[in-house]
Picture 1 (cartoon, rainbow, N blue to C red):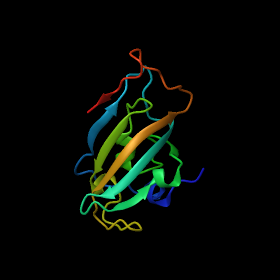
Picture 2: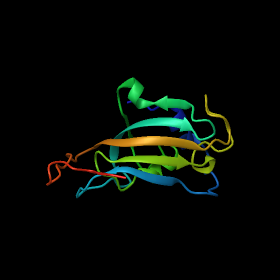
Picture 3: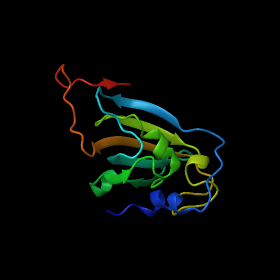
Picture 4: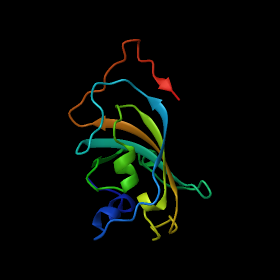
Length: 144
């Protein structure tokens, strides 16, 4: 499995970033389940990343047709993902607004300018060892 460099690089830094602000999470689709994501889980996530400054898209797993797989909460991706993708059910969708302190800080990363606030539309596709639960009312979900 290959992780995009833009998500992997923060794990390679020899020092932690200073945390001045927090990740904002908008719950766009929620499901009910008995097992939610926890630190250490292997998950698969579809995502679309855009710059808050102008809305331009810099990456999207949807375009590749394959979700990104990684272990959440272990520093394999940017800190905003490690925090923002916890406590999710399979099928949940969230919009994460990630300030630079939880993303790439004051360094540029490919098409992402230094100091950028990032917006990720995310969807939890899979949670290793857990089957997606069917809703009792025929699969109805709560859109927020």
